[in-house]
Length: 226
Image 1 (cartoon, one colour):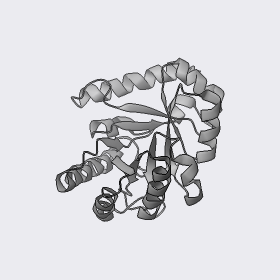
Image 2 (cartoon, rainbow, N blue to C red):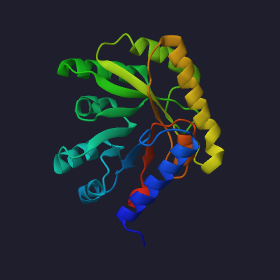
Image 3 (cartoon, helix red, strand yellow):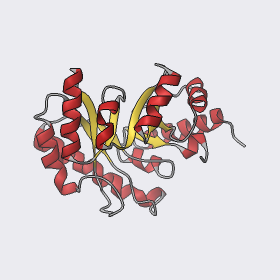
């Protein structure tokens, strides 16, 4: 059985190979190690292997690990942000990936304003149109982005999406291509930088990198089954 260090090395090699195949430079894709449901001790072990960015699905679990691990890690919230957790999350997570309603964006704006520091967010897009997934419909993203750009304490850094679960590997690539093209159209229309594309997980991250992913969210391949 592989050790965590061996799994991390293997994933890094595959990320580097995918970047090279895409003609992109090393370091152009951030590995977000999804540590949900794994203890803080595993996070410390992953930090010892050189990982620095960790993703949590639930605010409370993430906050507990932050308090245990300290400043050695950067924490991203990759799951949906519930209304009653906004104030707890803003100011603690470096990036909020799964923001999927304008109402939530306004709540983040108010919480960040109270802290006097802008919150960095990604707009989650339901790129596959599945009823079981969160996210803005692709046709609604432009309006949400334009309204968000008027808010002084919200910074939209880019987009986030998931491919359908039944489309592993190469089958997922068209969905990632769709998100990248949507981001490019939004850039042209608004002038926003939108540097982040958070897409790709354990079963399809190489395809996401080939289509421009800047952040890949990998859990099982690094930490094993929960």
